[in-house]
Length: 363
Image (cartoon, rainbow, N blue to C red; front, side, top):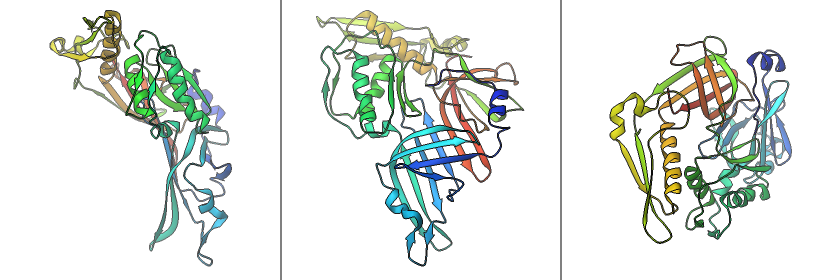
C-alpha cells in the first residue's frame, strides 16, 4: 500500500496537465487498450470498509453482422474467473484494479450496437465463496488472517498480503457456518482494522490512526465539488462490553472517550449523548482488558460516522482508500483531514474524474 504523500502540482506535471486520459484493460493476459477498442465507459471502485472492490466496463462496435460473430474472439476471451487488470491515468498509467471477471452480459438491441458488459471483483469477492470451517487453536490472529487472505493470492486474484499487528485477544478463534469474507469483517470490527484491496494487495490493518494525508485539495481549484455532512444519528457516548473469564465469572470493559481523530466527538458536542450507552456481550472477551479494548474499538468505529462527505476532482490515479485527504480553502469547519473510505475512478466520453467518499470521528 502506498504510504507516500503527493502535491497536486507535482501530479499536474507528472501527468502533463492531466491531458489525454486513457486506460488499459487486460483480461486473461490479453490487452484491451482504450485506443484500439470501443470502450465507452469504465469505472473502478475501491472501498476501505470491508466490501469487495470492483470494476465495470462495456465493449461496443466489436460485432460482425456479416458472419454473426464478435471480432477478436471476444466471447472466447471474456470468461468468468479470468484475471482482470486495469491500468489508468494519462500518457503515464498506474494500476487501478487487480482481480477477476465476476460476470458478463451480452446485449443485443434494436436501437443500438451489440455490446458486452463486464463486471469484475477483487480477491475479497473470491473469499465470499469460501466457507471451510476453521478452529485455530492457539494460532495468533495475524497468522489466521494471513492464511485466509493468502487463499486469494493462491487463486491468482491477488498479488500479496499485508497484515498489521493484531494484539489484545487470546481467545481461540472458531469459524463455522460463515464465509471467509464475513469472518474477516467480524475480526476487523473486533480489532478496529480496515479490510480492503489496493493494486492486488490484500490489506488487514489499523489505518484510521495513520493521519499523514496522501494529498491536499483546495476548494475552487482542484476540487470540482465537496459536500460535508455532520449527523448525530447512531452516535453513543459510551460502549460497555461484557464477557466471561476462564472461570465463567462476568467481566466488563467500558469506553467513553473517542480516541480516533482530533477535535470534539459527538458526545462532547451534544452532552445528552453521554446518556446513550451501547451494551454488548462478546464470546471472545475473557478479561477486563480485552473487554475494554473491544469497547474502545467499537466506540471509535461508531464515532467515524459523525462526519461524512463526498467529493470529486480531476482523475488522480494515486488516490486510494485507507488514507487521509486534506481539504483546504473552505470555511474553517469544512477544512481539515478526512479518512478516505471509497474511491471511484471514472472514465467516460467527458474524460477521467476521481470521486471519493470520506468520514471522520470528530470536528
